[in-house]
Length: 406
Ligand SMILES: Cc1ncc(COP(=O)(O)O)c(C=O)c1O
Image (cartoon, rainbow, N blue to C red; front, side, top):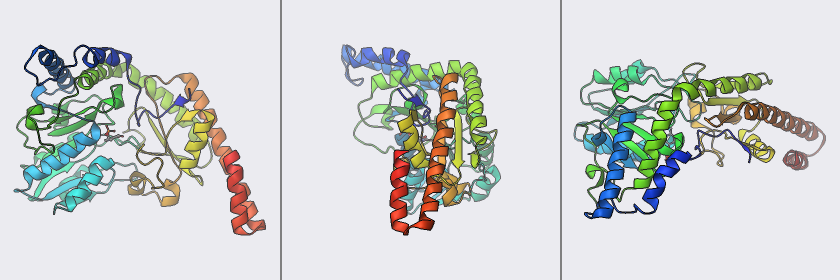
């Protein structure tokens, strides 16, 4: 199998999580809302999973709402807080580098009269808490800032942002911790947030399950009606197996992080050293305040999407930015917000390591990336030379064919 350096897109399901899930996919298949023995077994599994997820992030069980993943948790947090707070105000403060499940939700809310203020970030993708505070007015009901960015790994100063938000009564603080949870200790009390989103598949749990932490006493409006599940905050029959798998994976990630985190960091640094030694390759994201597994670069003069394709053929799975952007020709909104011009941002390459990444894989990945860059630059050089000699249309066709073959 190819080397996998795309853990920010998703992670392999941990065997321990799968094993804990299996009984709930087979003999304990009951609906957790059923009043009979099958239902009671499923309910007990769900309750235990809820307690374990809560414990791992310093919350109470009743503060956990299971969802279908990070996107739903973000939608529920942002829309839920917006609609619940509408009588008090219509202004929401966020940043320009949020995941689309927050950013596009903001755009959606704009259509209903909400005023969305996007606070800019610096060259490293960090937002200044003072700018967040300056954007808060008496009409502000929500601040939503991600804990760590999915494209460049930059960690936001959420505690400091929380201190600013707390000075303004009635303003809720949401953080998207989907990307952070695998690599940072999550403690909702220390972060002092009201709402926090998680997705199991980013830390070795199953896909299609996540959670929203809702601080006790925080009013959000359910975005899905039709059942009393999740204390009326999310209608629909619960995915008991998913919740159980999420709890196991989160506990393992939390327990192992102190050892695996630094190990992954050493491998990341080794690969970073190899890549920034190549001419025209620059690291993006914050040099210190970023996730240990995250390595993002821009490769001067090349197209990240073509590099990813070439690397896929060569046996390395990675991405240009977020998995959602990959496959489209859209330039990363994160890099653009960080001030990278479009032609530089096009050269983005994201390498995200995980607990299964080995030294040998990092060495091989470094070699494959260096080789792919060289091959594509040679092809680009031939293209430039050919366009001097021939009609532009013919030259582009010939060089494109060559680049594909290379
Ligand atoms: C920061 C961030 N938020 C939200 C999501 C969405 O999570 P999910 O894929 O579980 O819907 C992702 C997924 O890439 C993410 O990286």
